[in-house]
Every structure is written in structure tokens, then in C-alpha cells.
Image (cartoon, rainbow, N blue to C red; front, top):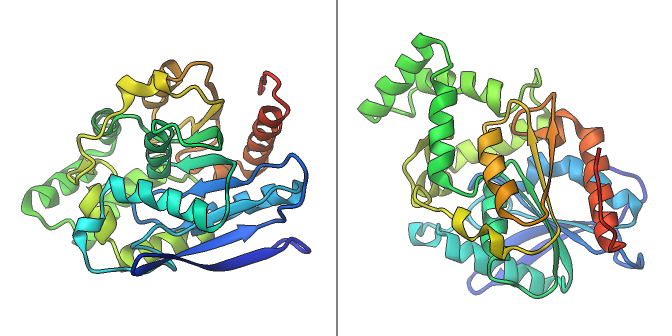
Length: 306
């Protein structure tokens, strides 16, 4: 934990449920707009985004929350809650409760999908977007994941297919085969950072949101997001937008190029040593890129990141 950086944690009451939040940094720095971070999954809590807390060292508030159904937030037993529309309402509720009138919005993976959908509603006070390794189309993601999967060893592919066909994706051999894909295209560090392990352990403890909205694994998309697609509306996003992805990312160059071409004036930075978790795999450069982008948006200058 950073020394002398104030931290506030608490709960936002949303009707009959509570959503946990964490604010790092102080709000008094002139010209520094808070950064609100949307975690991935769905259902993978904020823990793995912890390196982004360092952005508060320059005087900016960095705000995290665990979306309903995971982490420190309430986990109601109601599958009807696990839908895009409810999570969009949650963003507005968190902003209102925490008095976040102006924000930069960073969404990682599923959080980036949520951020794009939110930006399309043209909300007040949204100053910029950072879309980290996120698709604009679930179908395109699935097609690219299928291509990456076909590059796995034949025995790994056979194990995955056998258990998917049998409906036994909770079998340990399926999980281990799935990890072969994850080690290539999710996080290439060995060992994985503790904060990532912690987040995924919490997901495994309660995978209902992920299973309901996405499916059995990153490349087996069977949930209610399987037909989600905003690629044809990206030109409606007229905010300063930064895209980030890793060279070995499951959010492949084709996935990110769709967004880059769709959002007018968007900038795209590829992290050459990273997969899906560039903020963990190349933390120092990642923080520098994000900080530069946010500062240049606030100074209303054109930006160029090298």
C-alpha cells in the first residue's frame, strides 16, 4: 500500500443490496478528474486492478468498486440481475452516491464492454474512455478465441471439446486444459501476481455471474452476452479514447482494430510483452501511458503516445 495516500472504503446502498467501493487518493487536487475503474469478468472482482492505485500518487482519485454479485459486494441469489442493463444502472448509482460528477472511465475486458455501452448513452460528466483489452462484439471475440484455441496442442483441444460436449466443464482436467490457454493469452507472468490469483479465487468461489453472462470459459461463450455487439455504433462515441492491449492478448489485434476504426480519433497502444493483463505484465509503462493520456485530455491538447 502506498504511504500517505488516503484510502476510503465503504458501501453504496442500491435499493435492497450493497455495492462495495474503494477510493484511493484525495479529491482536492485542482484539474485532476477522478478515474473510475470497471473490472472484468463478468464477476471477477477489482483485486487484480490494484496496480492502478499508483495513479493516485500524482494527485488523482482512483475509484474501484466490486460489481454486484462478486468480491466484497452483496451476492444475491437472483439470476435475473445478471444482465447488461442492471450493471449500467449500477455505474450511475455509484457515481451519484460518491458524487463523481466528472470522471474518466477505464474498463478492462468485460469492464470495457460495459464502458462502451455506457458511453453510448451519452452520460453527463464523462471526460474520456480507456478501453483495456475489450471487444465491441462477443461474436468477434468468440471467433478470435476459436482461432487461438486451434493453436493449442491437439490433446488440449481434445480435452476441452470432450468436456464441453459432455457438459462436464467443472472437471479438473478441463480446468487444467483451459489454463493452457490462459497462460498464453490471459497472463504470461510465472507465477501469476497474487492480486490476480486472489481475484480468480473469488470468481471460482462464486462463478454464477460469469456463467450466466459469459459461459464456461473465455472461449466457450454461451451466456446472455453471446450476441452483444456495439461495433456498428462506435462512431457515436466522440470522447477522447485510449485503447490498450497486449501483443499476445485474447483481445487480439483484430478485436481491437474494430474499436480503433470505429471510434473517431481513438489512440491504440500495444504492450509487446503482455497478454490480457498489460497493467500487471508491464506495470510501469502501463501506468505511464494511462497517466499521460489522462493529463493530456485534461489539458485539452492533442496527444501522441509513443
